[in-house]
Image: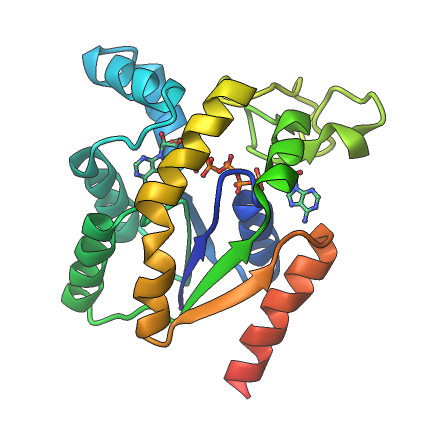
Length: 213
Ligand code: AP5
């Protein structure tokens, strides 16, 4: 099973991917997370990646495709892609990769959310640097530690108003054309992601259960 979560920044891709992984045992591949991990190398490439992310732009396709191919080689079960593909080149390369593996895309969930809602969500986001769990400060009630592994939570460096605006612009220009691209292939399912986390998850599950009937 190959699922793509396509959405603007902070729409809830990571949150929904974690819920799907927990329930169905899929492998969650987040290119944003992979890139943040790669920054630990602290070399020239990671510096370039950091600057690009801070500027809200897309990291080069060559770097992204290398990361994705590595993850696919070790994936044995269904895959949920969170944050990939993000432009037409990546979408075409991904289609090629799947064809070479004798696989295909099963669902593309487009998590639709107005910019203002996404922006509000982003300012409250806290993440666990150890296990990657995503929180929102509204639901944390002043707790600053991860409920699963007790690590101190952090705010992402790119969760500022300025960077959010740049990321959103990049999304509109480079990623949103993929909505029509996948719609034309009959793979797109639009989900109202302005609803609560549970309601969004229920909408995704409804599609999955209907299609498997
Ligand atoms: P990435 O890490 O993918 O960032 P993003 O796309 O901007 O998405 P986010 O991770 O910010 O948000 P999300 O949709 O996962 O929302 P979340 O679940 O956390 O990418 C970062 C950067 O890396 C990019 O800008 C780019 O530079 C680079 N990059 C990544 N992939 C690339 C690629 N393929 N090619 C080139 N460059 C690439 O939720 C957000 C908050 O909202 C949380 O606090 C959460 O608790 C809360 N929340 C979630 N759902 C709900 C809900 N339904 N109701 C209320 N609150 C909610």
